Amino acid sequence: MHAGLDEQVYAALMDAYELYGEQEFLDFDALSDEMTHEIEMLEQEEKLLQMLNEKIYALYEHLHPSRNLETIPGIGKTLAPVMFAIISNPGRFSSTEGFRSFTGMIPGRSESGLMEGKGGKMTKAGPPSIRRALYLAADVARQWDPQIAKHYYEQMVLKGNQHVKATCAIATKMASRVLRVLKEDVPYEIRDVDGTVLTRQEARQTIVENWMVPDTVRKRLRKKK
Image (spheres, rainbow, N blue to C red):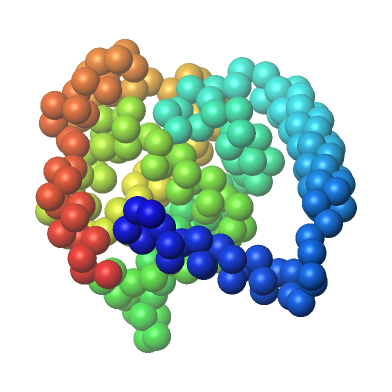
């Protein structure tokens, strides 16, 4: 028996014992029926979820026919309806700062209320779903948008922030892009850090050549936890 395999087998047997207790035998037919039932329930839930998502996306297309939100790297068919539903009328935000404040992805103020503390925690004042959507979008956008990638690189390499904090920082940049695209209702253009318009392939190549965070940096920052 391979080294360590006997311990794994023993652990599996103990897990089975905790699950089935003092039973003298295991009814495999009953277990099979139970598993089949569970699988059927999961499949049914997946079908219902797919139908719901299709209805949500159809409504989103009706309300946002240009689908320009989906031209922003990191925002696709799943996240676009979420953001559009929460923002609804972008005109109700008079400024980018106001929208960022709404999302809750800004540093909290000090107790005196006179200044923002350096490195303060997010206020989390807005809907959690918009913060989650912006975070997920940012984590993808840093791989395809050079301007976002540069900011992420600086957060990790120059400021020494770990991945989660760095991604939260670039999520605020995503918020600005989302609001601008919705207000102007124009497709998003991927640009280099100097403002040059790039294709998706050119943008990715630029990031690979200039803004990839070294593995050594990631490993060092992970040790800080």
